[in-house]
Length: 265
Image 1: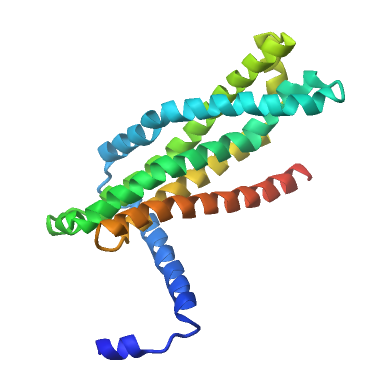
Image 2: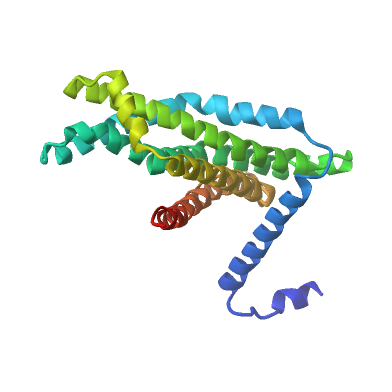
């Protein structure tokens, strides 16, 4: 029987068949998550622990990245605006760019590299060392304990990190604007909040939820289905980062089209 299965001709080609089989496995993995997330037992302690690891332990990197993004984007935008004598519009320009796109996108990409790879490597190493099998033998649901908790944590912590990144980026932008145009803190943030609408804020939050879910589910899927051996763990961590970043860009593009369509109504 095994020989017959191995000799079976591919439907299209081996690579294409493998690709569609991977899509089917990923769909079943996501479907299983939505089935498990509402069923008891609920691993609240593990969710809180993962929220701490994903959120608090990412603050130093997120803080530095957001601060640099605010300063660099302000410096890059100043020459273009100064040609038209419109440097007073810098706070408005920075706030729109950061809240609408740069904050969620930069945070999600940093989290995909740090959190996604960590989840893929951690679950992958547990798969390789057969700890997941041991959990099943001991009457513990490894999918709920390992996958559901991490996906919930990433889904809810990424929006919080995005709001924090927005704030830090605006602080970095203010310091740059204050040093060059001598704009006060109150004047800067008045222009910031006048330029940002509720649609911008809600679209940023909803995108962040989607980004967080993507990072969590991809990292867990690649780790949970990693191959045997240490090489498989490395491959799982690497592919979790690459696929997460690719999907984040696709989701950003689709979200931009939807939000622009709503804004144009």
